[in-house]
Every structure is written in structure tokens, then in C-alpha cells.
Image 1 (cartoon, rainbow, N blue to C red):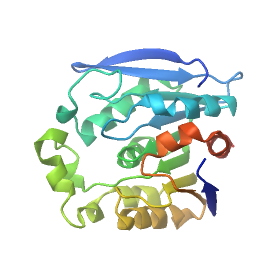
Image 2 (cartoon, one colour):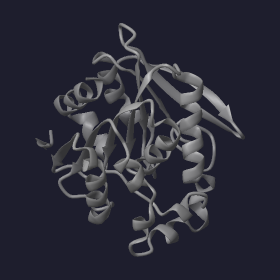
Image 3 (cartoon, helix red, strand yellow):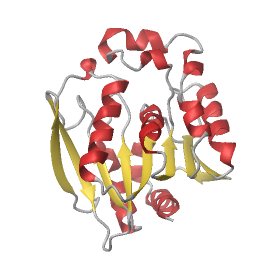
Length: 243
């Protein structure tokens, strides 16, 4: 199903952190009024992205009944670390550790990934597929497997810019095997993600035929920023993911 949505102070959240290796990873959580047995994990994108732009969505998810946790990946936001020393492998490890330490092992999981974290969500499915009931991918990326361990400041950009390198991503198989409900949110035009990536991920998610696609007309690749400004769309998304 495709929903065409015209483009149009988070509640107080609990901040906490954990140490992984040499880095301090800063996190937030938002609690629903009643325990629901479901936790949404919000994973921001690359570049200058951080959890701050996702706080309104975290609050709306909690209001819809899902406990919500999010982190600033190392080198982003409030977390320590140099961005050029990070990698897809390290992002996966940080997200997995957040879930291991701070999510009830009996909770169902909702994984929400923006941009680069489209790959991270796929990587997490390898460990957690039996617990994940919902996925939400917002302008998601996918990367070749040989880019996974490459530091962002040491050849990563050149590697992922090889024409068609994304076709070698393991994300497509991971999403095709997913057995839960999926939401794909994309801008009307994405100047960052190749159309082939979006089409391939859409096809993979449709393998189970339980996909809702939301198009934000007039929005850019920065879906997190768009959602922060569009309460109606955000609450609709929260309702889909908490149902």
C-alpha cells in the first residue's frame, strides 16, 4: 500500500549512556504510560545526523504505546568518538549493545532506520529476526558487504561510489526474509539514494506483501527533519508501528 502524504517540543525523555570500547554512547528513552511489551529502536543516519531530530517521533511512539530507545552513534551528536574512525560494523555493534543492555529480552522489537541505518537494521535482523515484528525504513541505504568493516575516513566513500556496488548488499536478502510488517518512507525525490536501491528494497520488503509505503512529497533525503516538522505524518507513522 502507498500513502502519498503532503509535506507540511518533544516530551521529556530520559537520557543515559553506556561505554563500548573507547567510546561513550549517549542514548535516550521514552516510556509509555503502561508497559506494552514492545520497544521501538530509532537509528539515525550518517553525516551530521543525530538522535535529536528523532525526539518528536520517539515521544509520539511512546504516546502510541511503544517504549522507545535511541542512540547517537559514535562520532555523532552527544556521543564521543571521531566519525572518520567509525564503520558500518561499529554502528551495528553499538545498536546491538543498546538493545542487549537496555531492552527487555522478552519485548517485541520495532526497528526504525534512517538513511545509512537502512543497512544497520538489516544487519540487526541477522541477530534478532525472531523478535522483530515491525520495520520502518526512511530513505534507506544499502551497501556492499565488503564496505562493512571499512572506516568511514579510510576509503569507504570511494568504495560505495563504485557504480552498482549496492547490488552486492546483503540487506536485500535480509528484508526479503523478514516475516513482519514493514513501512517504507521515502521523499518525493531523493538526491542521495540511487533509485535502484529504493526499488530493490521495496521489492524485497514486498516479498511478504505486508508493506506500507509513505511518500513525503516535497521532502528531501533528510526524512528525520521532515518528520520533526510534520506532526500529523509522525503520529500516523507512530500508530502504524505501535499497532
